[in-house]
Amino acid sequence: MHHNLLLILSLLFAVFLLVMLAQKIKIAYPIFLVLAGLAISFIPGIPIIKLEPDLVFLIFLPPLLYEAAWYTSWKDFWKWKRPISLLAFGLVFFTSTLVAYFSSGIIPGFTLALGFLLGGIISPPDAVAATAVLKGLEVPKRVLTILEGESLVNDASSLIVFRFALAAILTGTFSFHEAAAQFFLVASMGVVVGLAGAHIMYVIHRFLPTTPAIDAALTVMTPYILFLTAEQFHFSGVMAVVSGGLFISYRSHEVFTTGTTRINMLGVWVTMIFIMNAVVFILIGLELPEIINGLGEYSIAQGIKYGLLVSGIIILLRFLWVFPATHIPRWLNAEIRKESNPGWKGPLVVSWAGMRGVVSLATALSIPMLMNDGTAFPHRNLIIFITFITIFVTLVVQGLTLPLIIKLIKLKEIDNIIPEDEQQTGINLRLSNVALRRLCDKYALEIQENELVSILKTNLEHEVATSQKRLASLECDTTQIEEREDYRKILLDIYATQRIELFQLRKEKFFSDEEIRKAEIQLDLNEMKVSGAAH
Image (cartoon, rainbow, N blue to C red):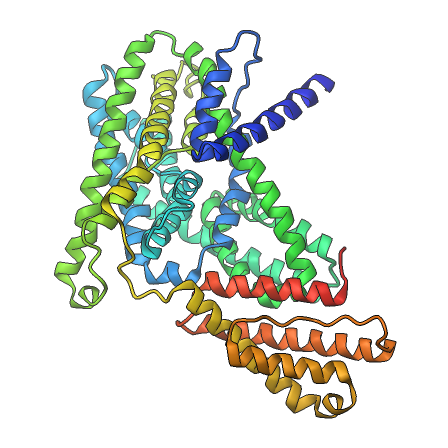
């Protein structure tokens, strides 16, 4: 027990140092951690760390998906639902099918069913890798939304392809019509389970006497509850987590009504997700010795050859899908032609951002060792090795070159996106206006009698006039206790009113969810400063 604990702590400490080093040399940390894990795995005496598939699917995947869904703008997701669906479902099936025929043609003894199994494993790009690589780069909002939306739901479609292919191999039977019907059932019922579970958690958060600590703990439990419930009924746990996360995120203003709760949750989730992301990427690199040892009848050279060929075909297939899927709908539909023309630069970035990650490796490792009749599962070790090579090639090669490509093609925003500073100023102006109206309508007497309230009114008038400064609370040790308490209550009431206005802004199309979220965080900080709440 002590040895395992020391090993875990040493791994975490090494991960943190490597992430800091990656930031220092300006390399996306998922890429750097995979390379570092690969190098560390060859150091003599390093314990072999085995990546358990259940650890990824049950421990890591639910919160990672939930966090991604939480920060996904439903408005933007729905706006670009067509390209997102074409990538998350169409491209997954396209890739799985072509990989099936390609791999069964180049690998001796590799059946079409095994090809579909491999295709389902390596078809979904990794969300974290693309986000980390694109962080800090000037990428159009449309491109980011499409990539993030694709990564939210493509795991569901790829895992369903994997399960059907695995069932066909184990049973020796397969029906396309049954599989298609089952796919829609599994995906749609996963959404139903997610929304039902999210409504239950919504009621608990809103109507029961929770505390900030309990709220944070419940949000950590929610993705696991949704995922396990859906999987228990053989529905899509991924779709349950994503749909539930989107629902709770959209209603979060009603559920989490205090700044203390939101700030506390933010700290918990930022730390937890950072650790999970970092650990899973270094585990990919550390897993190589175990994968090599399991190659069996295949040589490393053979495995690398097949892995490189498959990596090349999935990169090519993404290009072959993205460009037609981007432009053909524009040719066929006049409504779509009203949108800004994406040209070739945006699709190029989307095509090159198809980096694979830990979900693919965990899926490959979850292939059973034995068939139903007790014989060894055919080509299992080779499939796992090809998956590793695919992850390595797409993550390292594409990940390192993607920023360079973006700079070379001088990618610019093509949609009519209001600049962030203009949006933030507009939001501040709206909030200051509603606060000033509230103050004048409800607290006219206090403005005359309480000096602090009168100063607050002056400050608000100044903010409305300049649209730049934020509300500042005044502190004065000589102020009478009753006046200070009145002043605090008025400020808290104004902040509550401003939150209602922020929710109204969400329904409008002028301000982005990202800028509204920033304003909400600022309100939270202001509220914590006034209330003095720290726990």
